[in-house]
Image: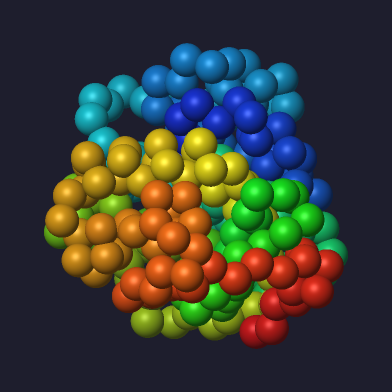
Length: 242
């Protein structure tokens, strides 16, 4: 079985298409909702997801993912099952479902997927430098009850990965795309830029998140540590390779 796991807050804009995109591969979907106020919870429940309201205050990504993983065990997960952990603004590309199912059938321990960043239009993606081939582990096999997510030095325990720490040495890339809608428009990108810098200030590894707003707050020809100058191409020409 594949169990969908989502840790979300105020994703009403995207959550229905996200949930529907993973329903074909997931036996059930568990949601940890972090005090949403925009109807996200109700949308998830209407789609048949099992929703847990967060009992926590404050931002702690690793803690929340540990909690969600424990809920998977409590609701019947078994060693050997898989978890598909995506964000509330990421939809599984339908063309890549067979590759995902093949990876799970083969017993692969931890699978990284290509995060495709939609930019300004839903048929356009960002492809300069880091954005062109960025991958993240998002599908993992439950190998034991002792799995936990790593703690980081970043504010909010950001960048703790979407697979448990014990599995990160066994990552296998697979030709599966997650369409990332969260940076689609300028207003959202700028808002998230200021949010990330407020929660996780002076993050030199992420270059203070400046890569997110090239072409918005910085000139399109700017080049920072991980990205730029801004380059876009059509989604239909952007394929993923393992």
